[in-house]
Image 1 (cartoon, rainbow, N blue to C red):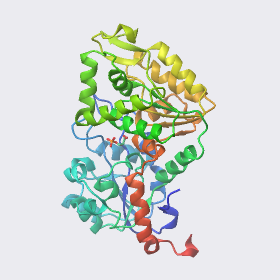
Image 2: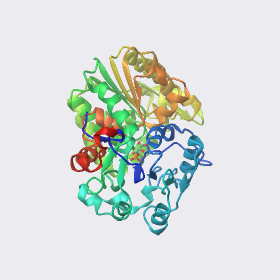
Image 3: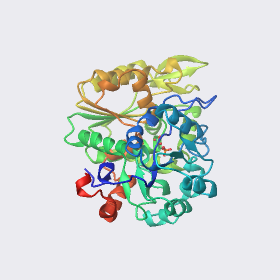
Image 4: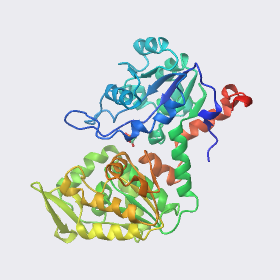
Length: 420
Ligand code: 3PG
């Protein structure tokens, strides 16, 4: 377990505390209404420990260029509703408006800044902790804050100013959710029961391929079952003709990471041909209807929206007989009910399995809670990429930052012994 500072060890009463959270949530594409507030609920334990501080929340929603890239105003209202407390919001991140709003805060106040990904420095700054600390965001906010709390486990795998920029500048403390995730995922890693399978789906294909690489080369997973967009890439690279429409969709999702992703996936297929399990049939969306086809019928110029029935059955069987299951991302376009079958069946299989099932990813967590399956899983993580990267043995920049900061600031901010 990492040596990080925790909220129980520090005295933040009467202090101005920056709290980075990950409340990036699924929104209704029509009216931006929250489809799931799980991530917002999960930061409440941290806020409950800071009721005597001035709490400034830094958060993001999606990424520039995506349909659900919006301000955090709705998030502040949703948080206020859940807490039954007033959560102020300011249409600024570190400019005059934000700094004035922070200066006017009183103990017990909560203020949410606008989407930190609206800041170019947040999106483009590259380099180490020092480079991140030289950004305007870190320079301006650290001038009026006493400490930084990182409770954004779900983006601890991203290196950006709002995650790692405060490392050397302010005492950085792990929030309650961050600690909980680290301990639960740590349990999955300590001596995983075999066979350990990873089920990787969704559309963050580039990230999943890197994780598959780490898991197979590091001997963490015995098999990788691929679903969703990840399956389409491996099928395409194995020589299955998915049709121009499906290949173009993939290229459009992976964008500039295409060559790199293809190189890693191709090497995996060559080095671990028995360990990557691909679907044997797919469900196509043919003018709004689900039509299942074995791979030999392809190409058919219609979008692939789910695993086919035979593949769903094989995957469910493998999940039920696994010792450990690490699952991330939906198996198909679960938002359209006819194509939710693969995703629902694999989650049901996880709930029924005797194995330790770790669920990751915003969409997966939403579905697990909507279907009332959370209690039947080993752990439902708020992180997608972050939990996978941790389980794959990679160092998370957000965690490295907390460890480094603890070395520097432990004695400057610790509670006196008799208060602990
Ligand atoms: C997530 O939803 O996985 C986190 O909020 C990180 O989002 P990102 O993949 O856009 O960095």
